[in-house]
Image (cartoon, rainbow, N blue to C red; front, top):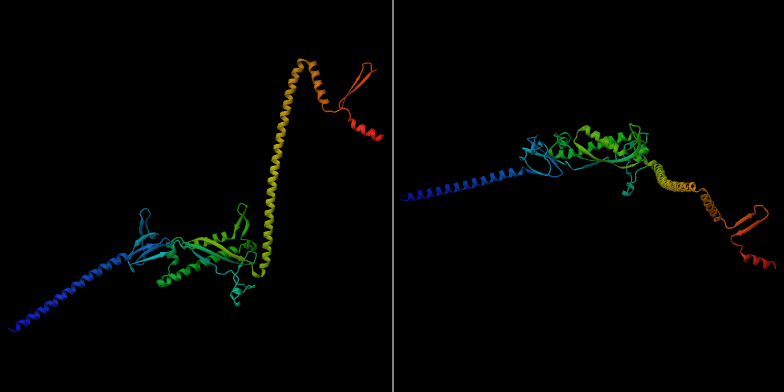
Amino acid sequence: MSEVPARTASGEQAGSGLQSLVKTLQVLFFLLRITIIIIFVWLLFSGVFFVDEQEEAMLFHFGKLTSRVIDPAQGPTSLLTSGRWYWAWPYPIDTVKRIPARKSITVSTEGHFWPPINRNATDAATASIKTETLEPGQGGYLLTYDANIIHAEWSVTFRPKDAKSYYLDFFQDPAVSEKKRDIGMQRGIEAVIRDLLENAVLAETSQWDAEDVIRGSRTVRDAKDEEVVETLQSNVTNRLIRLVDELHIGIEVQQVNLVDRQPPLATAAAFQQVSGAAQTRDELVRGAEAYAAQEESRAVGEARRIEEEAIAYRTRIVESLEADRKYFEAMLVEFRKNPDTMLTSLYSEALRDILAQVQKKYILHTSANGEQELRLQIGPEKPRAANTASTGSDQ
């Protein structure tokens, strides 16, 4: 009777242990399902990415560039445009490469054509003073067409134009790791663009005289034998654009700037004198041109005034002659009607007009036989005050 209760107790313990194991497995399976769901949701949303306004992106599936239909009107494209959301499988299935498509990058010649800094200076103020002599191997310079030396500083601003060509043909370097590649590629791009800029500057400056380089412009004759003004900056820009297009590296040259230029330091004073004389000449030429324009304007106004006065005088004379003609024609008609009366009237009018123009008038009358003459004075008498004063003084 005592063995039965012992077996029952051991069986109950085994049943409770199995139940605990089952419950534990149920909890583990539940947690496993939750983990799977979380992993699935993470995988689903971790592939969502956004392309910024200043970027373009390309999607690589197992290292191969893929195409997607972004706009049904344009068809599939390998470039993911900016301002949109996209989805991709997590790495290493898919890889997203972002390209700064609209970000401008500026590169300068970094003193390659500039005289060296005085490295023996002890303070910063003196260090900024350049040496007066050109140090071989240290000082940079440019050779001009007339075999002179010129120092200049240039810069170029560019941005990626064709993201696919820019990344695949010019940007990619599979021999280095992913992290190092971004740094190395950026340095490589700037170095290539800087070399292209320097080549363009060297080639263009070698075709210009030193004075034209300092001035930055020159006058040449084109194919039609007409004078055309060229600028050094525009010519270097065109030459650099041709070099970039020949390489097909997918960038766009936005602007090339001639930051600064100067003659060799030993001849800087002479060049400044020449430059000052040229400025004085230009000022005198501009003053002479302004004076010529002013005098020309005054002469044109004077000529117009004289011409208007001549036209008015001609009109007045023509009108006067026309009036005289009409008057004489009317008088001719009256004369033909009554010649004697008309002659008498004309004689009286002429005599009246003549006598009206003189102050003293004398009428001399002689008889027919010539023996008697009568002289009458018609006009004002002489003032008596003067005569009286003179008579008193004589007494």
